[in-house]
Amino acid sequence: MIRFLKSLAGFLACFRALTLLAAPLPEEGNWGFETATQGQATGWRQSPEYPYDRVESTPDAREGGSAAVELVFENPDEGAQAHYYGECPISPEPDVDFRVSVWAKGSGRLALLAYVYGLADHAEKFLRSIPFRPEETPGGGSIDVSPEWTQHHFTIPAADLPREPFSLRIVLAATGTVTVDDLSAEAN
Ligand SMILES: [Ca+2]
Image 1: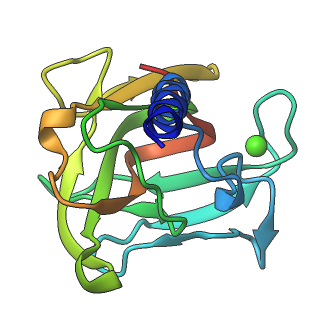
Image 2: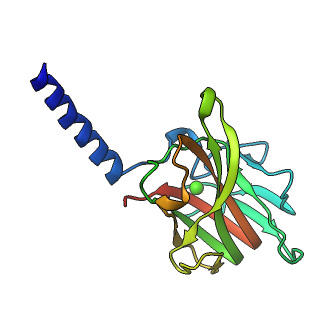
Image 3: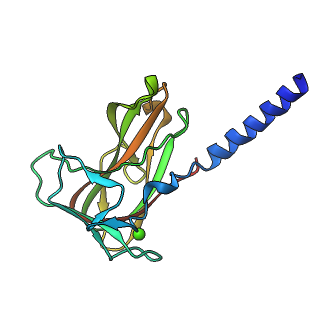
């Protein structure tokens, strides 16, 4: 029995090591915006509280794909935000930095947020929004988007994530006119 438990512990340690190495985003999340329904990326939606001027699926995709999403939020009032979020829940490791990358091009700025939900009582309950920290500007905030497709890297430090079980949704907060494609999770 003890031997069995030891081997089980070994297996679980391996499994954990594997998940730390690579925690891919759930496949069903349409992270490349390849599928659209009535001109809108499937599985993504605008926040009614933080609307864009316009969001639509565009064929102007990064190499290897046939669609991306164009976010338009021109001349916002001071401090105003527009949110476009993936409906697919993500459950990152609670004690590991959560790193994602995204491709963008256009004219404007892009920030990433996470809507974070607690999972007490087997129900998701919205807790708060957490900003990702861009690798280019570690102090926080948004990154400058250039006219050429460029991959940008964002992190939520483990210390910013809840201790209790949680899930999150990725939120794209852009100003100007920014086309986004191919989100992915990154190994730590
Ligand atoms: Ca795509």
